[in-house]
Image (cartoon, rainbow, N blue to C red):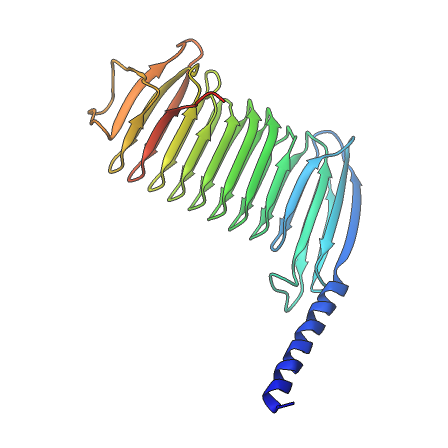
Length: 289
């Protein structure tokens, strides 16, 4: 065996040993807390995913998969709030410091989740839900009568089946997708990410979708009731729904760059504002399936 071949074999063996050590160090932990009505949960997890689903009764169950001994799970009950923190030890990195959480909490609990890069997921809750991350993938679904706040840098955001919600999304460059999201206020602000809304804009709500350079598309049914204002300074604007023109427009109409109009019943119409500086805006009609 040549010296170079021996060197590569030695390196491969060392890498396998490191991988085996990491796998052996992976541990599963579980913690339980009892909380009162409308309790709280805060999770701060630099590396790894966090998923929250409803529990049975006023109990918080934390199931954690810890990647190595370079990270610990700190958890405490402070008043009526459970606080969970992934505590990184010296030398921890994105792999060795990873913790994946699956948490079950009361549906009426106030939830706050932080992650740098791991996926964030919340479903079937009706307390306030706040999710924040840098590159984290955010998925929120089946939420009712709750405030949903999402703040990311470049992670994609998907929010589905939120009814009577107060929804606010702030994203730097991640794409934002809203499916069947309705409520008194639905607001998305993005610097360069695209925004896609599919739904009917509910009744008597306020919907504000804004992206500086990203494209905005709203796909609505024929039966939609909305008062829509759309404007892009440098991008194109298209209306395939054939809105009835509004008699009073607060800006000078420019074909292909802005429009304002109404459709459906004025008594239940929502106010819809679509804004972009250089992105395209498209209001399109949903085809029957």
